[in-house]
Image (cartoon, rainbow, N blue to C red; front, side, top):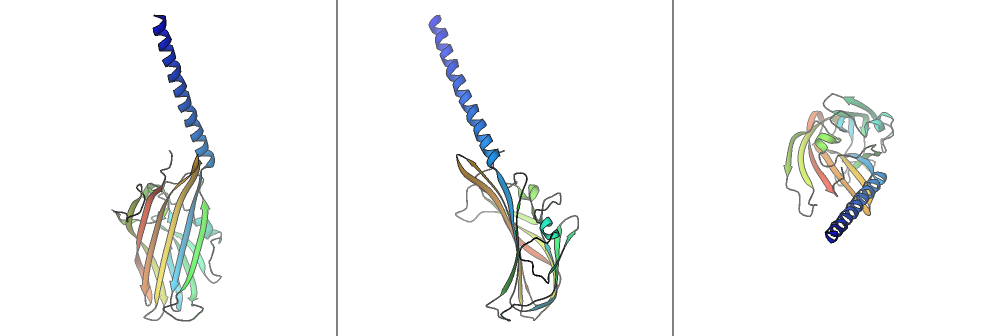
Length: 240
């Protein structure tokens, strides 16, 4: 009887030690994750033209979440977005369904002169931290995207992408108005990347990336459809 009780006591001690070790390791990893977590958004918008354009007005969507919050709106409001030319006027407009930056300028003139082989690009960019972890698994419902998100469709990811990646196409809208030669090509692109980084034993991260683009030829006056691509869940799945 005493031997049986000793065996049971030994087993209980082993189980208790194992559970304590597991709980201790879990507490350590949770602390390491929370104390090292950083989250940020990287934004880039480019306007490229291969010839002069005049009397320019653009309405270009900026990334916002479903509540209308945007990691880049404050930068436009405070005029701290990098790369905005001195003669560009930027104004934020909120329609309730989307937020756009209205850009007006008398002209965009490539400094090297008209040449299709040497287009001129203006790049606007910012990097902004997030106070909370970014939802990289479901950006459509949980993070900043170019809205309205229309015709959303999930597709097979290209070979070489990570096993957790999900790839989508979608459309949204932009407005362009300017005068120019009939053979002028103007391209507008906007991209947003949301990324979390942390370290538990070794560095890890996850992210999503979305990009919309529009190519125009000749003079413009009206709304256009932008084609979008998005990859979500790239990297190590974020801890809950």
